[in-house]
Length: 478
Image (cartoon, rainbow, N blue to C red):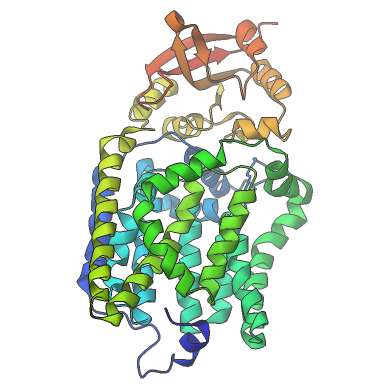
């Protein structure tokens, strides 16, 4: 793996900085990945549906933080809003955004390794795209694929010597998902440490300019709600899943890549990428609320470290090439196991296959009420049915209520006073004692009891613990 100082010194090699190697293998790997994901494309439950509705609100002139709750900076919903003309009549097409983002990231990894003279650069797209983590997380619109793409593009620009634009890419990365900020900061800190002051200032200039362009206009208009929703909400929300269980699950799925990445990380220990990985890993260990999807951000690091270790062994020649061949076999076995686990079980989870049926029925409901309900369901139904969401509350993630950003009692009271159709993803198994379990985090059980009644019931297609999608008519009778 080429040290940073050398990567800058070796830019003038008689070629264009932007020259793309003629190698169809990595491109074909990316295209096959897109084709496979396109063949299995479906509506999904998840946070992404709230992001889609937020993007729609953005195109209607609404401002995040002031007109609707948004827990991140608006880069992702800005991208989705930009794409809206292409997907106006095909909402499912938005689910290609994380897929294409992963494919571009994979190709950038190939370009980075190829420029560094890695003999196994062509394997980067296969090693990246056909891992369990990338296959499973790219089914959902979460933003991690976009933030990862910006980060890897920043690495590519950094290797090319375009430090100011690297700052732009890094800024767009952590303005999409803030947990990537430590990974970006390391590059500037190490430039200062190695007395590369000009590069550090250029990186800082590109970063601060981008942050200023995006953040300052929003701060002027929405100062207090922006701080509440992008910062304090994350500090005040309760801890979620057991991070140790998440890490164990990740290691169980990505054992091959992690095993090969360890020597590659050690060999790169003086480079910015290695320190960026270590700092991010420590940050995630301390992070209050870690989810498996966040770990997709680690995959490009692991691919580069792994293939760099294989390249080192290959160029040692002799018996070391047998170790390199064994490493490639290990990666192949890891990918095959990942593919089997994903396609035989995990790919079937989280589907919202009857979304269009739910939306068609909701569209025909007689009262002109707005919709309200689960952020995993309601925003998508609203987009497909042409109904509005009550007071733009697309993001009803229970953590916003637990953190005090939203008040469940007040919101529920206002909703039943105005009249709404509440859409919930629930578990209803009377024989086991489960009666409409699932809406309680974002809607008052008291208001449900005195103001709501079922009007539509659909089977859930998620293959998870919920078994029904229910639409309730909620209107205060007083």
